[in-house]
Length: 69
Length: 264
Image (cartoon, rainbow over the protein chains, first blue to last red):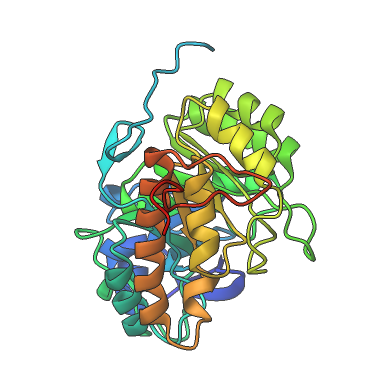
């Protein structure tokens, strides 16, 4: 299967071509309901994770709430 | 903008039209673990907790999650921008927070100097304008400058939150004159955010006329955080009651409490 390289939370990563954000989250074991995703500095709506296909060179940020003051 | 409604209330803390019975907002950083954190928030009687936004640990996505211990159903999450040094970073962080949590009530904090953690008020004002235009309700961490607090209010801040002393310092309120001026002039709620070290500091903030107190380290770094959380809850209530009661005038000399008539 052909792979494309993306940047995930600051680190290079190869993912299958055409992989969606929803599939990536599932692959990583991350529960969709507790995170927000930004691609190339634009917020990805949670409702669109299933359709959002990753492209070569995408810069992805997956964030969650942590303790803070 | 002079269309800001008078939203300060004697009974409750009212922020952006939301009513809270507790005037104590607690942070969720620096605790031993999320379980202790949850117990402290409970003991503090807090209804709002501040939270930070950070990258998911890809190597360990199953690490404990804050939301599994402090439920967003029970607490109003107040996402902060701690660690942001530019207005753009702060706006980016809060847009992610809104997507993660679906809340538009946020805490804006744009720092300048990594040693003092003093806020950069130019960047803060800039970010506030962007956030208000984007539909956020913004509680703003700021310097204890009455002029700047007025500017923030005019730009649509939902609350102004001047520092009592540097973040995490525990030094108490260093400039009570300014905090009182800000509390007196403001039409939006005023909360002392940062610098509270122990219960008396929280009581002083409330006696000066503030609407609330936001603190984190004073509880998290106490030897017994749960007990300190309870102390803070009582101090905020006591300080508020004292402010509403109206304190006695001070005198430079003694004034006897017992009558002078009828002495033996």
